[in-house]
Length: 325
Image 1 (tube, rainbow, N blue to C red):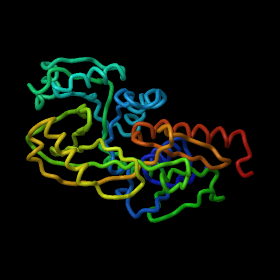
Image 2 (image 1 turned 90 degrees about the horizontal axis):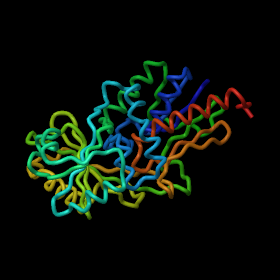
Image 3 (image 1 turned 180 degrees about the vertical axis):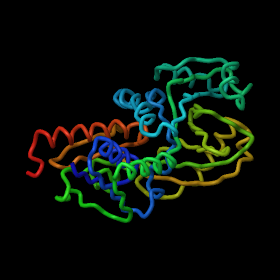
Image 4 (image 1 turned 30 degrees about the vertical axis):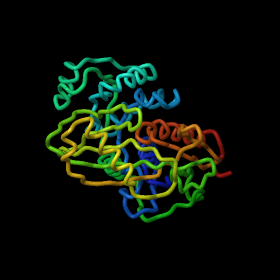
C-alpha cells in the first residue's frame, strides 16, 4: 500500500509510523521547513487520560488509556511512567475534592507520601491525588524519534513540501494538517507555555496545581528544565504568549514551589490547536482520503488511537473496496 500523509504534527507522525509498522510504503509531507514549527512541538507531552477526565469526554479517557502502551511500544526509551501528582494549596482544599469526584483511577495520599514521591515538595502540601498509571514524554524528543524510526522503516519525510489532499499517485492519503484543513467545523484554541530552568527543584513526574482561577501543570524535562503550561484561549490568532498569561503562569508556579521565582526563563511560546465543537478528536474516511483532526489539548494522548483507527480503515478499504474509484 502506498500512503501519503500530509502534516507532520503529532497526528501525522503517529499515523505515518503506524502505517509503516504495518508494511505500508509511506511518504510524509510537511509544509514547514522543520518539525519545530508545528504546534505539537510546544505541547506538554502528558499521557494523562484520567486527569483529563475532569472535563474531557469518556471516549478521550477510554482511548487515551491505551496511549501509554502504544508509546512504550513505539518509543520504549522515551516514556517516563511515573504517574501524575495533583496538589492544591491548603486554602483551596475544596478544589482537590472536586477534582477527585470528577476523575477516576487515583489514590488520595497524605503529606508523607507526597514527600516520598517528590522530595522537593516535602512539607508543602497536606494532601494530593496520585494517578499512578499515567506517564509523560518529552514531545520534542518524541517527534524527532518517531521521524527517525519512520525513516529507518523505509518511510520518506519531505519538509517544505505540500502534498495534494487527494494525490492519485497514492492508494491512501491521510490528511492531518490541523487548522490548515480549512474545515468550518474547526475552531482554534491557543495554548501558551514557558520553559524554565532551576536546579533548586527536582520532579520525577508532571505535577498539576489546582487553582480556582489559574490551574497549572509543570512537566519535568532534562537538565532541570520544566515546561509550565495550562492556558486555553479560544482564538485562532497565531500570536506569542500574552503578558497576562506569562504573569499568571509564573505566579502560579511560585505557589507550587517558591524556587520557581528565581528560575531562568528559557523559552516562551504558543501554538494554535484545532478543536471540534465537542473537543473530541476524530478520524473520518472520504473515499481514498482519511482525515485526522481536532486534537484540542489531547494530541499526544489521542494521536496513537487515531493513528490505529486510520490504519484499520485503510487496510479494510484496500482489502474490500476499489480504492481507485
